[in-house]
Image (cartoon, rainbow, N blue to C red; front, side, top):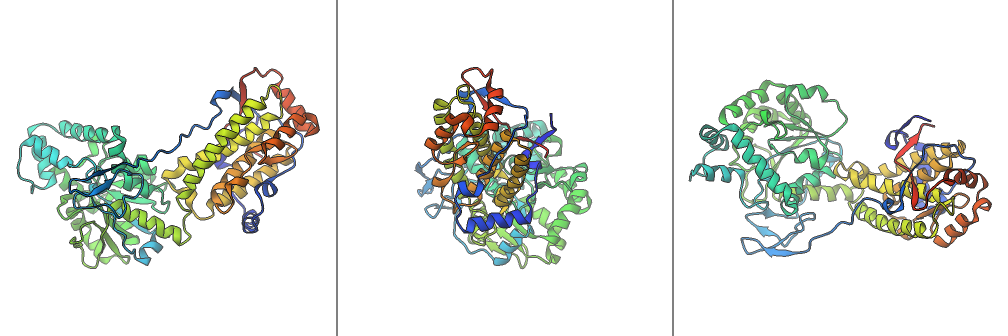
Length: 524
């Protein structure tokens, strides 16, 4: 059997095929005409099959919550944390989603991958619109201390002295898990992270937060300790956690002594060297901090010389219109943390740097239509009676896997790069031609489904009503169930070689079992 590997590692799109693809899109060539092909004699690859009841794509419909309720200030607050809160939300507690103009330089630097996000807890679990109180408030309550001006590390030191460091970390983990156990709170705590993840140009992030949301919501690899920086060259998004991670309890920086050691490391250690390098080569955006945050004040102090001499600009994002940047020459953007990233996303879409987020709505629509199409074929054209139906299974599996892959990769945003999906589709077109040359019916059908799925998302100007949901050798990708039925029932007259191969594969197929093509392909 041929060696197999994930389809994502098979092909690189050639510039010539991409040009053909773009030209066909501009001339609005139909799906079926653009991507139909003639198949020849098959070559057997390993087949799997499963119960027909399990052939539905695994992704579930997205549900939006439209409820509204009053905030403490008496304002109306949208509970739709997956979407922008919008103009109706104005309160001191939760900040404000204010439409503000973004500097052109910031947009250009973001597209070039030259923006470094420096993120504090106000953009995560400690935002006041998550639980309404902070971890600082919880610890102060435990101590019975009425002084709300005590610096964060001093308060943590007092707690550790009275109880223990393990009790401190247990309290934070309990808070984090409570947030995670309630989707309402979790959506609010991770709104910023999800918005960041969908922009692929953020390759490095620095944070003082302990939580694991950058890892889970943006696919970032955490760099916490000196030995982690041996993997700096990994081609994946990275998050530098200057105050440690809850996933590595020994690394968490909480008490005054730990803060002092952390500042020394920031000035001279591997973490500090990496942070200083990024700050001198990137525009820096501080988000999720206030002037009361002892951690950011000390970090800024430790890196002040590097920030003051950096050639690129520095920004602070803060919802309070009275906030003044603690660094001379820094620009303040007065809006909430998550909404700032959402505004930046819109600007990148308008500049033609990103495909709009509507591709994920489009993916959901395709998913729903494909579910219905699969059920219709399975109920009317079972493969144990009509062998050619197995190629329709392979095609629909390819289409479903292309859609599911893009949906699953949403947290990295890679598929949103301009023309990226079209380039991948062109690459699959090349592989499909190789499968045709090898007379590999089964894989050719799957590849065409995957190719069409990529085109459906990467070329929104192509109407979904023309998206072919069916396939049969001899007629190729097809929009009409009636024509598909005629071709599959035609058997030997539709495509002699494919039919003979399918007959051999389905000879002992039990009723109620359907073929499935996994997201794997052979080398060609």
